[in-house]
Length: 187
Image 1 (cartoon, rainbow, N blue to C red):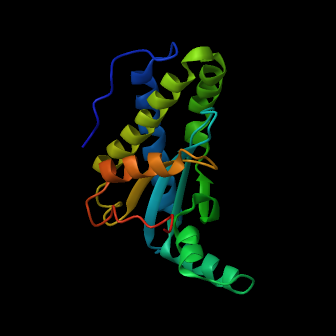
Image 2 (cartoon, rainbow, N blue to C red):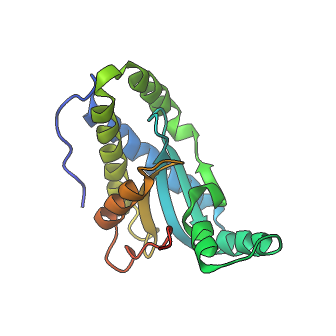
């Protein structure tokens, strides 16, 4: 289910090369993660950026990480279903938020420069970035099928009004229907 990427240059960038680099970095990050999971049950993987599109990071969580976070939060916070869903699906609350930065270092340097140089074409730049991130996870699903069996993959934009739209778009492209039942945002 690899997505065809337009052979255009948005904001002066070579998006074929950027997509290839994101693919390689994402596979490397999940391989690094697999080496440290030690029996933990992975349930979600995402790549995220911010509204400025200057970097991409890899995040993941396990059932054990979620249970630990939920237990610690329940000691100080009322644990309603909305808050439980937030803890389950918000990468900022995950055990492996920003995991495996090394494979993304060169890409993030290039993305920072490209974002700053995007001028009036920032929306085109950002659309290309989101598409490249989705493509990287689609590639990851193919390359690491066994590791990612039953794992929900998605793309997000941290602390952004665009997050829900980007998440829903990526979830439906990257997951079978059962895994696409994503409940991060209640109501």
